[in-house]
Length: 209
Image (cartoon, rainbow, N blue to C red):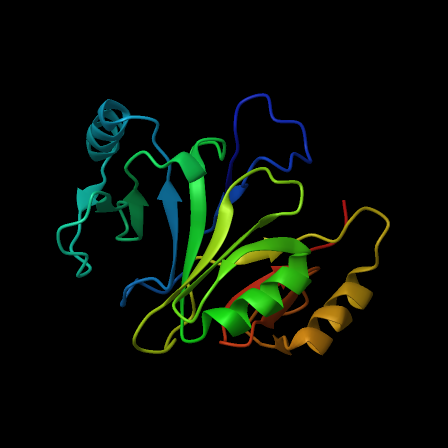
């Protein structure tokens, strides 16, 4: 496993999205239902970032986006992500603008994840929902209504860590009352709890730190 965090980071930092890269035996077979959007500050920044990412091994990918102002790329293992055009809403998010989740019902997902993480809803419609930390900092969590349903284990998922002093088992129970269900991914006797949200997206409840 590899952790990707900014240089000099002091944990915890509500403005930062931590990324863990974990080796798994399963190859990617379908479009990911969870992906990352990267923010840019100008057209020149967007072009430079796309060029730098391609030099690092990213490739352009067509997921049916058509003629859009953002650029869709895939990392070396085919995981899709977007480099967005400059948008005022993402001006203060840092390099990661949002984690985006394809779903059937954005309203249900926003209700669950808003209560699960105590995040604030910024917009909720039948087609999309937008959440952000109640502190008003860091990336957004967005749900987009898309055709199709989840068929395989997600290659990108969220990990939730209870607040310091909280009880992991009690937090997992609270999430179950909100609609989460237990799921077995072969994790065995792991120190974290694996659950699924109302649309079957896997996530982990870690031990407090």
